Length: 492
Image (cartoon, rainbow, N blue to C red; front, side):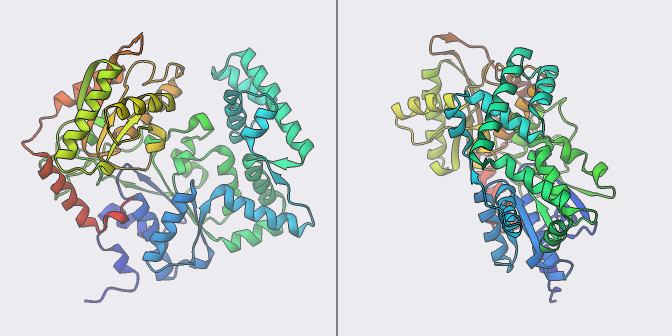
């Protein structure tokens, strides 16, 4: 039997993914947990609607948050036969292109782009204050309003907030004196053009009639203002995100924009991708335990070997990989040796080095641990939890899990603590088959205590009965589940 022209794109999708690809509402929100195939759904949605004639691919824009993600999306769309028709890019790059046309149409010179870090150095403004400048811009706060909000929320002391507001004034004045704009200005100016220039708005809404936005949980209020102005009163909007993986509030993002999308766009359809095709059931269950009491978002998602378990099932119905393990070491030197041993054991079992990762909370920890690992001749560069987002590995070691690092010592507000837990969840769900968590009683000369999250993780590990599965059978089971969906490169 020959499938209709677009329906072949539904082959290999689970029922939730099919619902997301074929939803007919003008605004669709897809809540997609780790390893649930979100990128596959996003690209299939574009291709499916293009082929069934409900959208014109020449008038589609897919918004990503990195150039690499945009290139990957374009590659996948080309593989699906939509090559060169759909525009894909970051919001900043797209807005910059639109603004240059707007300035040209108004016979205005294009301003130079300011490099914020360089300008801050010239003004002798510390980097941590530069973070506050970016946060205020992302939240659309004037210096005076920023001072009030930062003080009231406990983000900074009143004195520190006042100094940051003064630095903000100096930074803005210097940009204006030099005739420059920065990345946040580009978003703000483009949003204003949509709001104040009806001809411009109409032309751009026609040019990019169908809007798709990835990683929506990381959107800032300023970015949402631009998206909102873009879609206007007759939206055709498809967004993908996961509030449980919102880890950029320090940079101004607001996961509530995803959670409350239905309030802004009445009639929004919501589809939940509730199966995890990346992590073993044990890893998915233990990782979800660190989120208890945080955002009421997706249910814990679990993947089974060869067959699919319910998203609410407490235990898998097929043999999983091993339960995550916690390792305690006397010192950071011992920890590095222990991590090296774990990685060599994984290599001996057949895991390629490229499929292993060591994850830590901060850049400073990454540099320190990298030196230790080099000294014991291990080829794996530790990366931060943030940099690991969107990646996946067979074997993962989450290291340096001590009080003050997880959570960070300056994370004191409920919102900050919740984000630290989400960040650890992101780190743990990078692992497909094997997950280790390590901490040390001494780091240099400092005496350390274990992260408070480890007791909860340890309790959840005890609650899981490990079925008699070897690492090789778990690996084969994971591959079987992925094979049911199609090529590994098409998983999101």
